[in-house]
Length: 202
Image (cartoon, rainbow, N blue to C red; front, side):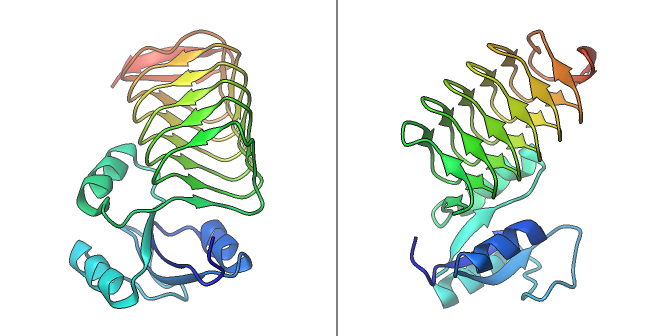
């Protein structure tokens, strides 16, 4: 990564801002639906993001947690979206990380695992060997994903969740914070608890 790489961050995440600066790169602006007042230029619309991108020749990082919004932002800005791998993460040389992924500090991604397009892997997440994380998903801080797990398209895995070996989480499903998942999770469902149970369809 170029030591003076320039980024526009879509999402208001101080952990990411700090990590980018520690790596010697620059946040030139950010866009958020909720938060204002950070020490970076606030970009309040898609048009302002595009204007700033052209002006500064910056790359766009999608750092929002809403999986549907991630997909919409990807469609709107994918020409200029890039990936970000924290220099303070540990990614196996045998792992595959696709375009548009944001990998936070203190993340471990094991050998033969695959993280597909536009996925956010937050601080302290551990993804063990031979896992597949399909596109537009969000893995929240300190989640533990054991070997051979498959996580579906646009899924959301809550903070400090544990996903047991060879579990499958369906497309557009949500696993609640602190859950322990020992059985497969169907598409478009909300599961939580220890052990996690399906509470409702989405």
